[in-house]
Length: 313
Image 1: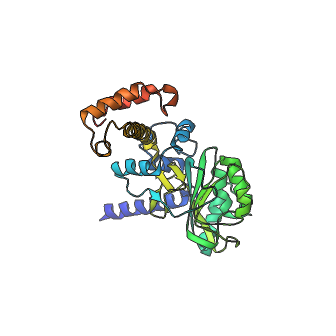
Image 2: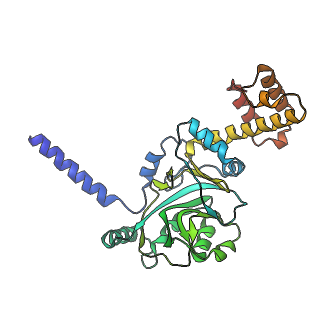
């Protein structure tokens, strides 16, 4: 009994210590735990440092291809649609910085301000500027604003300019924005959001930065890679990003081959749109071998290494 009481006392003490140590932002150690499958470089805050080159390649990937790849890996809750978009003709990719907002509660808000002050954050202005301080080039600010639009406008043109200055990218908000005309004038900035309203942010507070959040029907972790275009947004675990891009690029080449052979009337639509015969697989490999290196989305070595591991092509 004494041992049990001692154990409970120790657990309570550790719980109090953990509570006191918890800040507004998730610690680097916590983010490393969340993204433990990543084996590459990391930022100082612990997030995986997915390369700029890979992010650039990802912009050309179709949402459906990324969705299908993730479903095949068991990730069924990474897509969200139904957005308003500032520049719907542009795609955006980047490394996710998350933020969570909740309806305002005075005692909790006071604690957040204290924790923010301990992290040297600006406690005079609104806390909705705090996630912007976290951003570096290539980041995307992703916020759970629980779908609130009226009095739930997380940014206007001032904060939009600050976001672009830090990230050279944009935002994805399950919430509202204001001053869309001003946001439209920020060259290079883009945003996916639920709606626009002239109201200011009221009765809503930031509660956490770089923690797991929900965006509609998607679960998002700090350090995920996001692909956003006019067809929606999809959040990709960092450690799967490279293979997803390469796999999707191969699918794109397969489609080009199929379209060409259909135009040439070498195969029927039924033959191309089903499991390929050994004859078609061999034809595809020969077609790939003569495809110009300058037009490949990947290196020739990446292509050859990938094809060597596949039996379905």
